[in-house]
Image 1 (cartoon, rainbow, N blue to C red):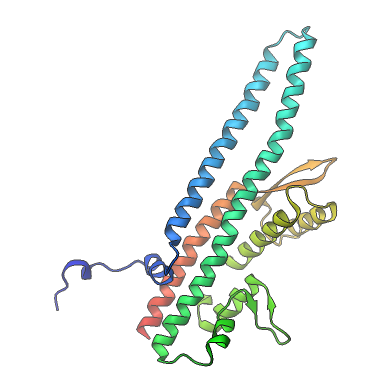
Image 2: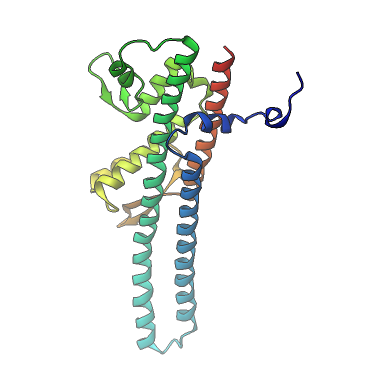
Length: 258
């Protein structure tokens, strides 16, 4: 039969995934809002850096004998440097505060969609709804002992059981562990973490639990002081979202044809 109209167009894997997971939430609009906020924060950060550079230039133009004005400019420049440390930390907290909940919500909705589509294919709903709700929650790890809360492990376990795992992008687990470890430290400790927490986080970077380029830091007395998500890691997380959606779309296509 000859196809006409919209029947000619085939959904991309990414659009297929978005179509199936978007019930009451618009993940595409959310992602655009996150990108917009990140862009505005970056612009503000760049403007602040320009202000510091301008102050340096003004200081260099002063008469070497003009100690009074030089001291004033140096004090002001020092204050700007100090302020920039917290300015960057605020930008980093905003970034992780948007990206981590987005990933969590995305995977919860994704497994909800897999649950619905699986039941359509199998033609049954399985055991009680209460048990099903528990089973399909990626925030819970179904271990040999009592169930426990761990989003990253829960995603991996459920992805392995459903067949989604081969469709997830390489390194997704490392990305999520780094993102949520940073999120937990920032949200529980603020910008300036306890000294032992800073050392532990630095040790994880040194031991290559994740790429050292993912996090930047300010130091105090040659010791880690404040950690930031790097721009590279932020962009990596945004790219990972797209890869997850594409992989999910591939999974749903395979499921529908089985």
